[in-house]
Length: 124
Image 1 (cartoon, one colour):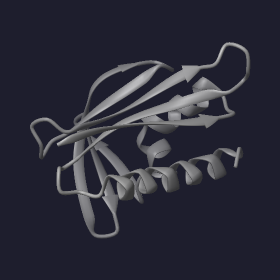
Image 2 (cartoon, helix red, strand yellow):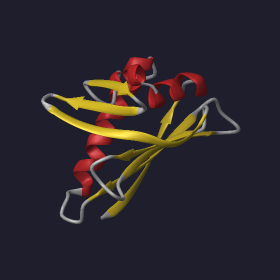
Image 3 (cartoon, helix red, strand yellow):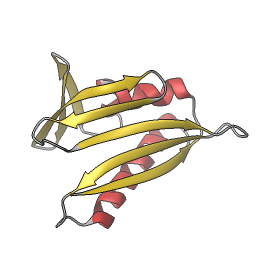
């Protein structure tokens, strides 16, 4: 398993970005086709595929870390980093790929999802 770290620059507010990375409605807007929550378990739906995760740690307007329920070690994390001299924020994403997975394909997938996020918050 390999860890992947990515950084995407966004011109938006911490409050709006945090909402998009930490709530079912926010995540449904760009990350998955639909996201629901039941007993603190998030269900992510893509077409006919479902994955479940729970938030293992979070700090308002700073970061949120989800752990996939079907894996012992896999998680994904979103961190918000403010740039002091500009109004830009970075969204730092940590994800994992299996050794036999195409790392570039996973990075491309994230890039496409971030483009959707940018369009939906009006910064594309």
